Image (tube, rainbow, N blue to C red; front, side, top):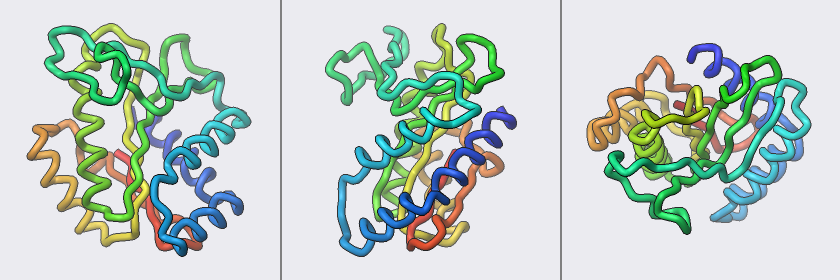
Length: 186
């Protein structure tokens, strides 16, 4: 899990340092544009597609929900499927050893964190079934906030969703250079 976390962090650092990404995020923030997550997912797709350490990737991966999971997918057209934004494998990984990332964006850090915890909680509930996901991460892009404030938000929603598998030691926040935005990963 630690190696996956380090790898995902490295991917995100490189992704968010790309000049064209920073320029677009500056304009999005200046213009107070909303619903730009589709653009971000397209850019991340292109980034994964050209990354030397990514063997394969899938966007909008449909994760099967087993009957005993007690959750219902409100996002998918099929209630037996839970969509995940990205699933990918590193070049040297074993077959069926994928890393998953679900992406959220909201200018309000607290709303973004709550959505992230809710998403990862749903996936955690179904993760016990047979699948090819080795690790699951939630990525949120939001306005910069103090780390202690973000940790307070995370703890509040970890308690609300009974998601004690999310730990502070596996929570990372980084400012996106040249913007008023940051990203949080757990």
